[in-house]
Image (cartoon, rainbow, N blue to C red; front, side, top):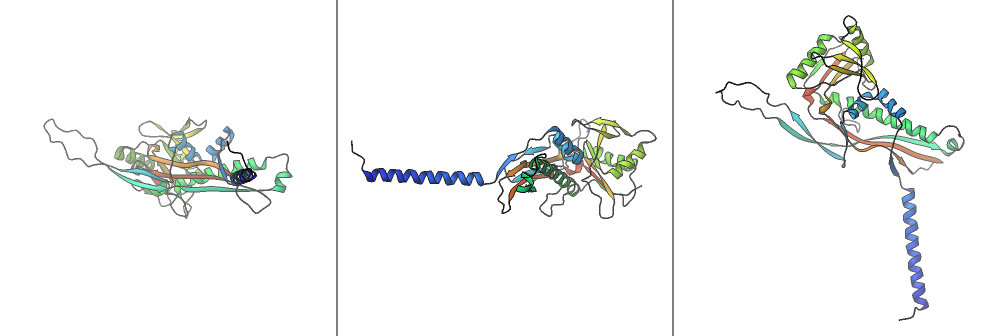
Length: 319
């Protein structure tokens, strides 16, 4: 067996020293790099989300919000095709109008709420957990922005297209007139009978909700509350087929430029929402200030894959 020389020992020690330096460098880089952590929230915080972003929470309860593995998501949009019909025993089979499916892709939109906490503020407060409070507020703000985009995003300013931009077939503009029972029933008839839709949610504003209560006074078409499975009870509208359609009053559904409101008739089976990253805390963001920087971020997009099964009444004035 050959003996180790002093040169061999020195070479080996130098090699180990270099390996330790590389390991230390890697550990330093890993520790200082931004990291993401998905947020697990209490029931109280989730309850606030329903109060402030009820449409998004409703879609979540219906299983419409699913995870994605890529930043580009593919959807198959359906165009209405043939309908069933009766024929005589010896009639020829009628020609079919094929249902067509259009493949579309959508890129994830990035929602972010930055959080800066100064060292002085953190050290000087022993009563309130400032970081956790700001993270909770960030989560609520991100959910509110997502809810707003799902309702009325127009695809500009880094957003995606929401309900009001995607529904094109069943639209009515009241041009400042108040809502009426006939208008609502006509829209439901067009969606259900004409397009095979199943409206399981109506989204509108507080102003329109007030008008609905007045409509209900004589015979209670604006019925008692119904539990929609989220621990919350909401008012309903009685459809012609006797079903009770939940009415969500969503503050994120804004009035138009003339101050008029809108009412959305939603078939949730046609709404697909994809998240590459659910709302998560991004930690260790580099900062040149004396403090800490975080962010709550969400990668999300959506598509209405059968818009003809939904409806949209705009231009609702104030009575």
